[in-house]
Image 1 (cartoon, rainbow, N blue to C red):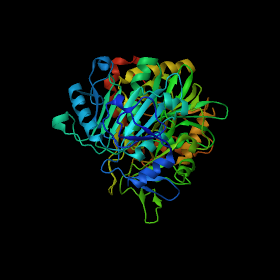
Image 2 (cartoon, rainbow, N blue to C red; image 1 turned 30 degrees about the vertical axis):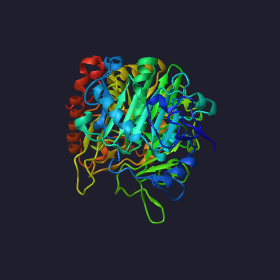
Image 3 (spheres, one colour; image 1 turned 90 degrees about the vertical axis):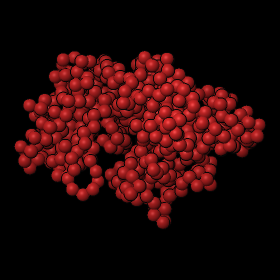
Image 4 (cartoon, helix red, strand yellow; image 1 turned 120 degrees about the horizontal axis):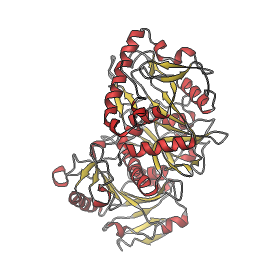
Length: 544
């Protein structure tokens, strides 16, 4: 491979496919060797040589990111600056950060990176060329560069030479901030500066911070600058060209249900909806790996037998075999792979306007029906609610479910007020006459600890029937407290499964639990009540 002088320092050699827009433009001083846009083989070689992780049986690379094995949302800040100040929805999600503190921390990060080898990845965020964002990730770790290679869209040789980033991520995973000096909450930081078009990440090795930072950027830029709806959803397309969207928080089944061998995968997590249709933001997938199996999720499991796949925090035995059931490091084990590792994928990562939209929830209270069709007003209510429920812990005994309401099924990634995204979605649903479904992938027959998780096979069957139009015009029943319309029959699914009250041993206990959850919905929706129509307000659950 040819060696060229890095313009940032005459003493620092560079390797790889280098952009003309050099590191001096980012203020990086005296780096070690700079590696530009290396391929996966080269990156894995460097990662192993540097002791960043290990190769495991089948070919993937496994990295351990402890003590951070998930995102740190409480350490995420947005710099308060004139250009974006009037648009950002300031509060618990978008916590303001002082520009002077940002400059001080950035300077210290630059000093930290001096003398270190750096891996630069230039990439596109967005499959639609009209709206894509050029993003550069600069990191001292080869495996994080490989993660970025997997997750985003890869420019060709001509594009790399001319590449100029629209946003830059400066990644310093080993640098620890000083809260007193830098104004951070802890030593970990994820700072977004829309004015400087830059993100600083430090104090955490968890790769998901890179991915979700880019999502946050697009959630700001696409609606404000292009009128494009950004969405936390997966997408696939059927044999007849019918596109479907799957909204849901982590653990509700977005990736699993969209990776369907009967439909082609557009993407598993982040998409835009423009006047031309749907397009994926990414070039790869980032799936949960806990309890992953060949039988349950064959398409995703197959990627864990491929070179170039990145595993995060998976437990490996002495023979380098992965135990996907072992959560001793974390329950949030992950697998990152390029989209084309899924055999039945859409090469263009785009599709037409969706015919069906599915809202996924994992209801640990066990009271929501496994599938119901929503009216337009209910669609707005449940989209703004963004409900799922998490179990309280993993120790023995019955635990109380923990309700999670995350507006638009992704509030922690939204720089703008949730109503901006909800209004855009409502208009598009009406314009394109899309059907909206609420699907409960959580518990049935009782709450967590008493009932059991809905069988994946039943959920797949119900979703396939909905997407195929088999549930249009069928007889329905109404679920009490939630006023949801549920089909009385779905081919291949036992009728008793469809009505949650019928699956409980004690109907009175179901009513008590349903009334409780309906009350939680009503209490949460109060914050939106003055911003929606009376019809939308009336579309929600009623505790009485």
